[in-house]
Image (cartoon, rainbow over all chains, first blue to last red; front, side, top):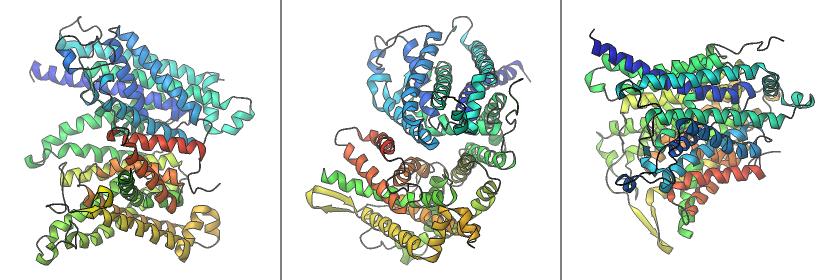
Length: 324
Length: 300
């Protein structure tokens, strides 16, 4: 094997690892909602879009010259990357607040429906309102942090380190959170709301905190996606990609376990991005355009088999999360 | 405005037809079936397979009355229904029944149905490809009503079939012995079992009924627009909205919910861009639920 081939494989692996880590952050956000607190969030795609668009608008400059004729955006603040990520988390949390205030006192299904509806509305809003973020064409040339340090061909290595730092920081923070008294209250609410309330816990307020925290994590992941792909359009945030694939990742890996969330994200993303690679080598030539769709069958079957045979996922929830 | 309301009734009837099977299964088995849309797609494509088989038979190529489709399409309803029912019962036995027997959370079954949806869509992509298909080529005749309202003749057929299906299922559920047993099962599964109702057999029948409605909805949806692998999946969100508006397991509720959503979506185009239609549907649903959390005809 020559060096060019090895470099190609390395590049492929690095961009795979970046995307899988971004999905792992989403999956940990969903784990806060569903795994710890039992909140049904079916609007992950909405927080994904909010995070990605917020960070893109905050960090990119206002288009000038020729570009201004083609790219319309409401504002471009040209601020640093970390400010963009922080703004993404803030906006996602701010949108989650009224959703929670309206639905968290009602039966668990309402949050599911409200988030599904709001996610779809957010996507349609960005698609239609061209003045805000260029409508269906989306935004391009989103700035990438530290991109002047190395030649563009090696940039993904730097971005992988950035994403891994975020992944590790969120993982450590969540692990500490779930092992704290706060985390135990969330799990108690998931198991029995009435009992937690009878024990003097403000169930509604804890659920609201969980909803906002998870939404902020999803906002951060959305921002990381925007700066990696450098281009976003509303089409990226459809429910299949933004929402259900993340539910599949969490269910496969292990609901209620952050290690499971990360493992599930890597497995599903590997199946999704690698299966095409291998399938194209074995199918006859006339079938090549259809072969990539076998990914749907593979992930669907895996999901059904895991749900039937290992209902707790590959790594289930730990029985005891605290030492005390 | 009248024009928009008429278009809304057409859209609402299509949504209602698609959602009856969904709300039936939701009411009886507690499953919120995410594969429902893709099962509709399967029904539509099975009919396509038979339409192309029938294309060698000359006398089936004549158009049915004033409609755009030929007798081959009408005949293809039968195999589409048979295969759709078989598929529904197959999935029930291999996925949902084992899950129910382990006492799985309803979200676990929901996630399993997402997996089923992906498998079905993957198969359709593999067999028929991503391109659009049509049952019949040629013009789609229009009918001109007073007040400048234009409708496709096919749409009148769809509205009639949708309302007939709602009426038939409603009568079945309220008058037939099997329908009463199904309602008893939906109401209280334990009590139904100790009253001597064979609950698994009833659930199979419910899937048979749902499979029939799914196939009819799929073929009619294929006649109304065109066939593509994502057709059912995209259709699923308004169906969810309609059955939630209508209340769990309520047949008439699904019709009412479908009509409210259809009319609201079309009337909203008087002020908003038509691309906002799905968002209008969701916002109505969320507002509605805040004031009537059990749906229009929901109990309690």
